[in-house]
Length: 187
Image (tube, rainbow, N blue to C red; front, side, top):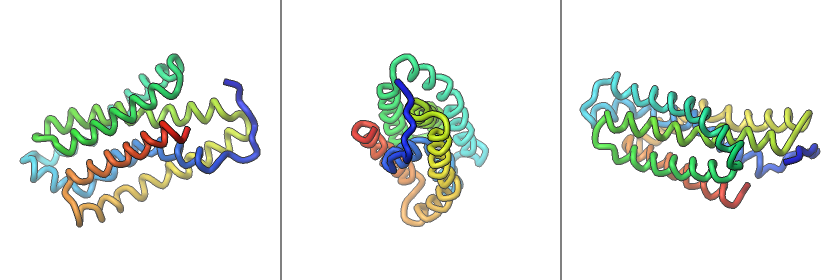
């Protein structure tokens, strides 16, 4: 694809790609306030509950190593859609996890799937822009993505007032569904 130099990236593109790049912080930080509740509900130690964070982080890291080359080989759309569907399904499965050990495994899968959004959003930006336009676009992309680690724990804290930790994974599934629609129709 030939890179172009538009004067101003479309707001829709910035928002969709910015939201795609928030999978990491949202997946890691949204349910942090519910960790004690999660540990109690699943009869797990605090360290086992915290292992679910590590599993997701490992998945996010390894997933980028897989999704990036796949998107270079197969195109951006197919790996992105597969990653979004897998993220959505993994989030639903996390909400239904019967044990902490299964949750840890599902969080690894969730991280692997969420990595597609992170790496492919940046690859799409590189496909569309170059030079100064790319720098401007990346700064806007990082602005959107940079808000997630700040907002996610606060939002998670408010969500724990009205729902259990399982509901928070339902919210993550809903986020995945919205981004799946955006990926199908907005990019």
